[in-house]
Amino acid sequence: MADARVTRLRRLFRGDDGELDAGLLRTGPLEVAQCDNDPDRPENGRLKLVIGGGR
Image (cartoon, rainbow, N blue to C red):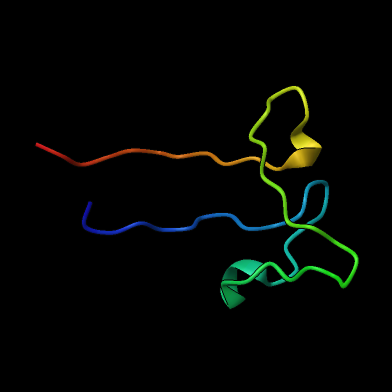
């Protein structure tokens, strides 16, 4: 892999608060970052990969 790009970085059900431009999704003092990637529980985080290029 030559490179990877983040195209969306935000909290569920919220608009863009500048997280993508900052390259950082800040958490509060009582929050735990979580990404279960479970389609039945999108509130627990989602990761989507789009693969391109290759030979």
